[in-house]
Length: 147
Image (tube, rainbow, N blue to C red):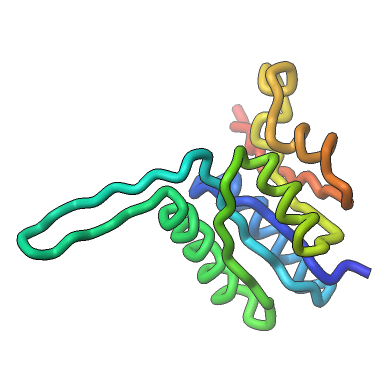
């Protein structure tokens, strides 16, 4: 039985499409969904504005991306249990690691660079399918233009 699904987002339309598919699957299966955004290097930026100081981190930025997607999915899929997370590492590594940590039975990724030249150079989907210890669903997110 599938109780936990993990999907990754980066703010792109294709990642959003994959997250939407993951939400649909999670709703259909009664599973919880973890929306993950990865960041490669922890960085801190401090901005001084008068007496105020604003601190931005790469982790915080990634968390905002994940939370934004999770909020939109909650609005569309009312009964869906969604958790937003940020994780350090390359997207494919973070997805596999977090899926293992939370005991996910399914990872949903898009097929953004699975076709064409990207299939030769590598892609998140290909790397996740090679290294995941759970099932992987590759959502069709590559939209072709019709002529």
